[in-house]
Image 1 (tube, rainbow, N blue to C red):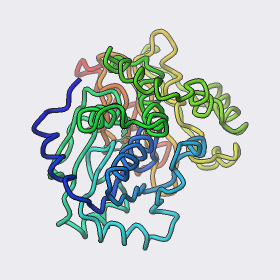
Image 2: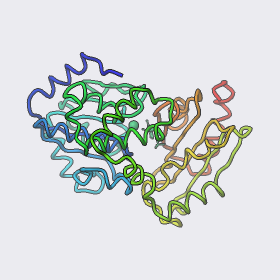
Image 3: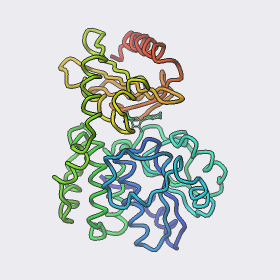
Image 4: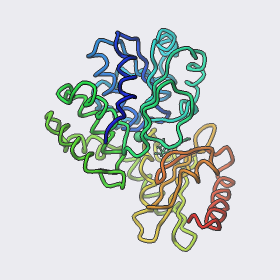
Length: 341
Ligand code: 5GP
Ligand code: MN
C-alpha cells in the first residue's frame, strides 16, 4: 500500500518547521490507538517538534509496557489543565485511529474551543467526518499503526524506525488484525512486520505482554459471561452477552478486562454476528463483531449511535440493559428482514 503523494507533500509542508503538536486518539484507547500515538510522537520529536499525546481516558493496564506510555496525558484523570495548556498552545493537532470528534467524549469540547488550530487525520475507520484540514484516511488499512509505519517509511525512510517505535507499531498491527488473521491483512502488512522485526524487537515478549498479562478476575469473568450470559438466537447465527455494573464488581473489574470477549462467540461454526453489552456509569457500551460480508458498521450506525469497520464496530445505548437487549433482538430481526444477515 502507498500513501498518496499529494497528501504526503501537504503533510511535509505542515511539518517543514518545528511545531507544537498535540496527538489525540479515541476514548477507551486500544493497542492501535496508543501504539500509533506513541510511535508518531517519537518520530516527530526526533524531527525537532514538541509533542504532547492526549487520551480521553486511561488505556487498559496490560498496555502499561508500551514504550513511552507514561508520558501520555490522560484527560479524565490527570489535571485537565495540562491537556488544556497543550491544546491551546498547539500549532498542529493530529487525530489518530478515530474518524469523528465525538469519539473523544468530553475532550472534544476542548478541541472545539480551538477551532483555528489545523487538524490532520491519520485513520482507517469508514466514513470520516469533515472535521479535518488534511485527511490521511485509508479504511482498507488493517490498522492505524500500519499507516503510521508507511508514512514514516515514505517521508523519512525505514532506517528511522527505532526499536521502541517498532514495538509500539507492532502492538497496534497485531491487535487490530486479530494476530494477523483478519481479511484486512495483505502481503504488504507482512513486509512491514519484517521491517519491524529487523529492529530487534522481541515478538514473543510483545505477544506475552498483550495477551498473557491479565488478572485472575478477567479469566473468571470470561468463564462466567460465556457460560451464563451468552444467548444464541436467530437459528444459531447471532449471539449476545451482557455484563451489568453489579456483575463487573463481583469480578473485580478493571478497565480493559472485557476486551476481546465479543470475539469468542464467532468461534462457533454457524455464528455470523456477536454483540457484547457492558454497563458503564452513564451508558451501555456496545461492541459488535461479524463474519465476512455481514456489515456491523451500518448496524452500529443505525441502531446504536456508533460505527467502526465492516466486521468490528461499536456504539452506545442509553436505555436499561433489559431494554437494550430487547432493542438489539428487534434490530436483528429488522436487519435480517432486509437480507443483511
Ligand atoms: P470495540 O468493540 O473494540 O470497542 O470497537 C470496535 C470498533 O468500533 C473500533 O474500531 C472502534 O473505533 C469502533 N467504535 C467503538 N465504539 C464506537 C462508538 O461509540 N462510536 C463509533 N463511531 N465507533 C465506535
Ligand atoms: Mn485501529
